[in-house]
Image (cartoon, rainbow, N blue to C red; front, side, top):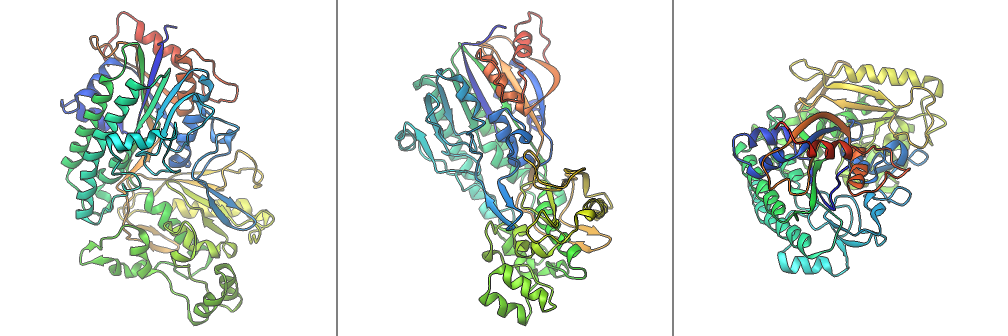
Length: 550
């Protein structure tokens, strides 16, 4: 295998390559077009279960969640019903793949969900401008980040890229921040490429992720549809950023360009984070409504949604209020104690306002003090619907007998498959039952008993034949992730010569990326990794004399 001496691994975070290339075909994105024509290309796929939470860890470790045990950022304790937020995987037993390159040096700039590791030789900078930063901005050497910010400037999008879809002024302001940040990213990347010593240079363009969450066209969501030209303008600026980075790639370096996931219509946020928790509340407390969507007019200003940044600003006006007894109990007792005494006194406990619980920006957590009374509840999620059965003997206050576990799972699945959009289309695409045998928790299993895959074309409201109307509600993002990623490889000097790209028409897994990068640099796949290298295929295809342009 003809391997490169050095390698640049460029992550175009969440770039939907199909949409991008359809735009590039019109001549608007010359740098992405040049990459396409100069690369051996493969597609990647990743299951929808917990998609937005575990896919980066799978890439960085080369391991499936069933091996690492890392399925979610939330760690549910079944004895206490508490959720602990884990900002990132610890990478101790299963390290970031580039540690296996030692003593070869690595320069890493702005990779998501990973902190600098002093055991890795080279230079590392984290959270200069990542989407959803999971740790404090830092670097090795320690003073490098400060020097970069002083010389090139900060990212105006760091922890400041959550787009407010209902506020055109805020959207316009955020749109402008992309055009300040992207040139700075390009300048820092070029500087590190040229001024640091490395065998592997790995970096992420995070702005693709943020832009597509906010500006993806989703007419099904009944929100202001921002000009499609805004998304085109963002793509052009991203393309200029990519072009500036490509100019600095040394001629003796191979280039591995990829994304571990894609983006598409957002049919998952409202069902997973708003409708499912409410549906399971109604399932457990028959006849009660935690969110009264018949009063949805309280969330609107005329025909339009009131400007808001978080769901609590919209949903609090329609959230069930505690009665006289409940108000007094909640004044003196913890949420769990108050809810329990409400039940004992014959009251249906209301969900708790978000300021009373942790991770309160997710509506699922408003119901968490009631979980010990419910037959099933929704775990907090960023994508999939996650249903946990409150099982006797497994949960600290389980109410479902073990003998009823499979019946309850089947009953819940039937109810969820019955959810419909206003046009009659099903809201649920598939439901995975994670414990078809014993319901006990074991290492490698997700904490959800049922994982719900949503129809990406879901709108802002659903109907359940048993428990009534869910929605309308206002989404906070217009784009949602898909499991459709890509991997392109261009050999040393490939960008300088005539177009010689080809599509291998193969689909690989995200866990294959890490062993492939290692193999391109002459390293074997570690025994701890699940992934398989496809480097040999990339190198063989890129060295063939007659290559058909894809």
